[in-house]
Length: 263
Ligand SMILES: [Zn+2]
Ligand SMILES: [Zn+2]
Image (cartoon, rainbow, N blue to C red; front, side, top):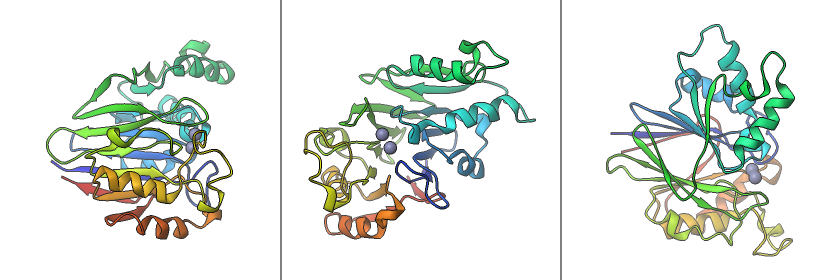
């Protein structure tokens, strides 16, 4: 059975010219799961699937570049003339319920604050030590090193097709090697230009270089590396070339609509 990754956006913490921030759609024949939904990714999502029928949305962390279009999706689910026939499962990291309560309080007008998101989302915090069965996908988590609590996400499709590993936002001191081991597709962030690598101490840096991203994919034994979370102002072609010095497999630049299918 085939699994498909569709990139919804791959820009770092600023939308680019023509592309939004983090968002990834993982699809099987029976299930669509979205990992992160940053600014300007709902528009891309609509090109590929019905936003009313998502199996789930899972958020790696609560930085705006990974979750802002949850607010846009909330309005689409609430007001689009074609109404959803059920609420959309929304899995948020620990602390996410309180976070979305506060956001709902700011935006609510016609609704009680605690109904703002709950009207359209079945919203729950995931346990990062556990896993989620989302249709025919099993999702698990590992903590990253970032400026707020953040979790890398591994997606295991039922069957033998191979797993997808998404680093979310992370510095190089996160211990993701075991978590990533054996994954077939690695979506790795590469926000840090190599020249800026040493501006922050290794242990507290919250983003990877392209070489560090490529090392993670190589050590995992992955076939495909998708490089993401890059500012266009930093010229992603440099990062792609640097990654290619380390990783022998296929390297894909995460841009809206980029697709990888595997089985
Ligand atoms: Zn972040
Ligand atoms: Zn980010």
